[in-house]
Length: 398
Image (cartoon, rainbow, N blue to C red; front, top):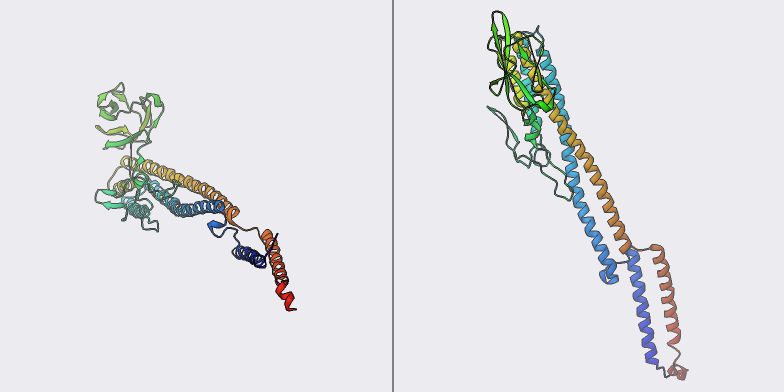
């Protein structure tokens, strides 16, 4: 086979250029620490790395949403704790108001304290979240969601919750109406109240002794005093029941249709107490307004004061139970956020691992390859330099 000098030179130059390109590519990989620097290096690996990078970007966005929810819910949980502390102080004040030795002036002073606590609770209910909204704004509000009006505190937000914009259903706000204005009234099943109270008799909160017998109808308890004898009649939805003209005994439980309640003291003639179904409509602000007004009213007898105290304690406890339940929801949400953060961390790590496996460089292998390529390139250069002088023309010149 005839081998021309020019073809040999061309083949050798092409081989040197190929080796130089391979050496340059290895240098680029080692400097970038990546095996794949462009899609043409390895199309399959580049596509795999791009998918992993997209997962990382989504994870970063979700992490920001989780952080925002964590901050908001943590503030909400702490705020509800502050509110519960204030309600406990209010309860202690109401208990003190029941002291028979207190004067009207002393009860009026307690009423002032209760109004101050009520104002502080309103401030807490309008707590901002630090991001331009409010913790209890429901589905969002640019203004404080609770407004103090002549008829009481009103919720001007939108009921519901605002969620973080992510794949994880995490809240940024809590429903303020439900939290502050919709506790269960009474004992959760029925509400006892004094409609006409001229005597010293007062009714307690009552209880349910047989849930299956409860009718859900409204009842009323009216008293008659004649000839020094006090009797009572229980009406169901305005109609007389079997408990008609029953001799009254202070502190003795009155039971009807699975319900039990007790009247204590000496009711006057025509005194009346109502027993109505409970509803989720109890506002803590209305409770404090009512008890403060009653404590400010002078000349009330012991029965009326006892009724105010019993009713206030019942309603404060119901409101506290509602706030406690909402705080428990916030606590569980924080646990859910922690679990979501853990899942997200796992997803992000998996994406980073997948991306690394697709495009990162094995430095040990890369160094070994580079050294081999460098040695081969140097050998090719030396052999070319030696062979290029072995031609007929060079020989004849000698």
